[in-house]
Image (cartoon, rainbow, N blue to C red; front, side, top):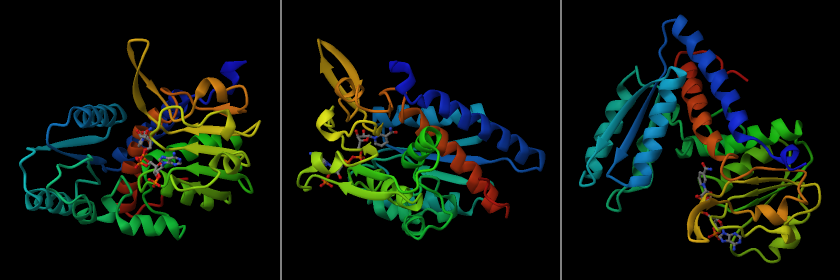
Length: 292
Ligand code: NDP
């Protein structure tokens, strides 16, 4: 049955959020109120929706959120001054700068200014390096969400051959690092890879993070593989606007043993893991061990 193959990101994210809600309540009972600062520079409509959703979700799990909106005309120094203020504020546990930033602001300079222990997106080089060394650091939310779905679906991932399609800093590379840390054999494919379909057909796990609607079709998938579709692409079809993944769901579904739908797969996991990272950051800042 189709349903039995679907990896239900809504259900798993609800589970993560329930765990986070309980963790927040336990911290509050000890006098610690986890807080997340979200920084938005400019008026990009998509970014405004993302920020609103993050703030709403924080409220639902009991995390205090602080929204900082700066005009698109802000200088880099003004953004850095705000980050500095949030770094110093001991009541702020997590700092998230919504990307993309306006063109005149250096993204790397801003992300590197965030105190690594408050870097709930896991983009600071200290955390990127820590992930690659297998240290217990704040990890990018989307790949961490994919790992949760994979562990829920497969249990132990040890020895599995995982193919990650895409090598971006926010999805592909951290995804590969997490799979390696989970003892997978990892292959990373990108736009210069030769015979990508043949390589991908060897995989027990395929994670698609390409940004090309329905590129990963049946040619890429070994029968029985588990397929995680990170892609979110808006396309026009039959006169309607709709969201599709990087995986050609209809052609891959019959082959896969399990697959994430778009929407309702990886999407809902990202915000849930952001909330979890905020609690982890609060725990670490108060000298408490990170929970499993
Ligand atoms: P990027 O554009 O930063 O990276 C895309 C990667 O795909 C690049 O490494 C690129 O290779 C590779 N690629 C492009 N074309 C091909 C090809 N023909 N064959 C093999 N590889 C190819 O995208 P992101 O990683 O930021 O995002 C990927 C997708 O995930 C997007 O659809 C995005 O919307 C979605 N996304 C979803 C999130 C969620 O919450 N669910 C969060 C973040 C992203 P090269 O490096 O050689 O150029």
